[in-house]
Amino acid sequence: MDVAEAVANSLSDLGVRRIYGVIGTSLVDFIDALYDFKQIRYISCRHEQVSASMADAEGRLTGFPGVAVAHASPGTLNSAISVANAYKDGSPMVLISGSVRRNLKGKNSMLEANQFEVMKQITVGCFRVEEPAKALETIEKAFSIATNECGPVYVEFPEDVWGEICPYSPIRLSFSRIKASDAEIEKAVEIIKKSSRPLIVAGYGLNSSEGSKALLELIEKTRIPVVTTGNGRGAVSEDHRLCFGRVGFGGGSYHADRALRESDCIICLGCQLSDITTYSYRNMPKGDIIAVTLDKEAGEKLNYSLISYSDAVDFTKRLTAKLDFHAEKGWIDEILSLKNVWENFVNGLCEMKYDGFANPSLFFKKLNEKLGNAVVCAGQGMHVLYAQNYLKAKFPRSYLAATNHGAMGFGLPAAMTAKLLGYESLAVLGDGELMMTIQDLETAVREKIAVKIVVVNDNSYRVLYFRQKHQKEGRIYGTLHTNPDFAKLAELFGAEGFRVEKDSEIDEGISRLLESDKPFVLDLVISPDSFAPINTDVLIE
Image (cartoon, rainbow, N blue to C red):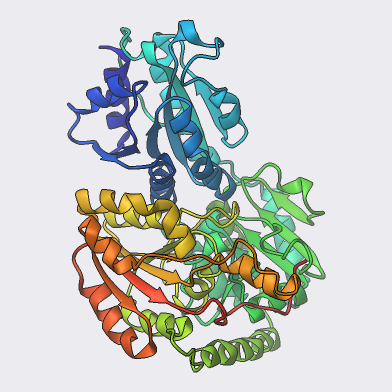
C-alpha cells in the first residue's frame, strides 16, 4: 500500500478513533485514505488552532495521544499556539503535517516556511519522513514518545511522499514510565516524617483514575492536606475534607496559597513548583520541597530537597506503603480557618448588585448547584476565576485549561472533544476568547456536538482593562470593544442561545442551557467593573 494508506492503517492499529484537522493540498492524499477507515472519525474544523486543541484535549482526557492534521506552513503555523499549550501542560498529542514536495524544499516555495524548526521548539519529539520505508517506524516512535514523555510530537510528510509505496506491518505502542529508585522513596519518607506542616501539591501527573485512587489512599492514611495545580484539579474531589482547592496565579484561593507559604514540607506529586504555582516565585514555602515530575528541566528552577524524575502514580503508591505518619490536627484546623475567610469573601460576591448587568458570581454559584458531573473547559482571562472558584472539580481531569501557556482559544475546542468522548461538558469563555474560535460553532452544529458554552461577556479584555484602570491611572486604550448578541449569533449557526442581562434571568438561562440537546450559547452580560474572586494577598507586578 502507499504511505497514506499505511499511516491510516497504523493509526487504526494503535486505537486512534478520531482525527481533527483542516484539509489542504499537502494532506489531500492522506484524507482520501481516511475515507476507507470508517472506524476513524475525521472531524473537519474551521481553523487549525481549534483542531489541534481538540487533539490536545483528547490527550488530556484519555492519557493517549490525540491526533490532529495540518496543511503545510500556514496550517501548521496556525496550529502552533495549541501545540505550545500541550507542550507547556504536558499533554500527549501527535500533529501530522504536510509540507512541500521534496524537490521544492529549501527553495522558498509557495506554502514553505521552516515549520520543522518552529515545531522543534514546542514539542518533545520532531520528525520528518522523507523515505517511505520509514513512515510507520516514525509513527510508532511519535506515539511512544508522546505517551511516555507526556507531550506533543510533530511528524512532517512532504506532499509527494504520501503516494509512494510503503511496506506495511502492524505496529504496537511501547509504554514505559520511569520509576523512582527505592532510595528516592526512602528519602521522601525521611523528609516528610520530620515535618509538622506538610502539604501535598497534586498536579497533572497524578490526575487520572489510577492516580486519584493512589492519592486518596495516601491522604486517608496520613491526613496530609492537599492543594492542586490548575492541571491537577480533580485529582481529588474538591468536596473532600482534605482538599483545599487550587493554588497559584489565575485562580488560586487565599487558603491554598497561604497553606503553600506556611508549609514546612511541600510534596509535589506529578508536578513541580512553577512560576504559576508560586506567583512568579513570590509565594514560596519555608521548608523542604519534594518534586516528582517527568519534566527534566524542573531541577534547573529551584533547589529541591528531593527531585525524582519518575512516574508520580507509582511513586505515590510506594510512598503510601512506606510512610507511617499523621499530619497534626492543628495544621489542618489552621487551613480550615483560612478557608472560612475565603468562602465568606467568595459568597459575599454573590450578594453584589450591578445596575443593568447580571452578577457573574451569583450565576456560577447557581450553575454549580445544578451542573452535576461535567468536564469544565476554559482558556485564559478573568472569566476563568469564576470557573476556578464556583465550579467544583469532582473527578479526575474534570477541569481543562491552557494553564501554563496562558493562551486564549482552548476552551471551546476542549469542550467539544469532551462531549465527543461521552462526557457532559461546559466551555466557560470570555467574549474575547470566543471571538477567536467562534467560527467552529459551525463544526459543533455540523458534527452534532451538543457542547454547552457560557460566555462571560464584559465587552472587554478585562484583565488588561483592570490593569489600565488601576495601574495606568485609568488610561483605557485598546481593551474595550463591542460584541454581537452571542445568543442570536448562535442561532444563525444553527445552535441555540439565551441572553442573561440581569440576575432575575439567571435561573431560566441555566435551565435552558442544561436542558438543551443542541450546541448552546448562554450570553452572560456583565459589567467590566464587576468583581471576580481573586486572591489579592499575593501581589504581582
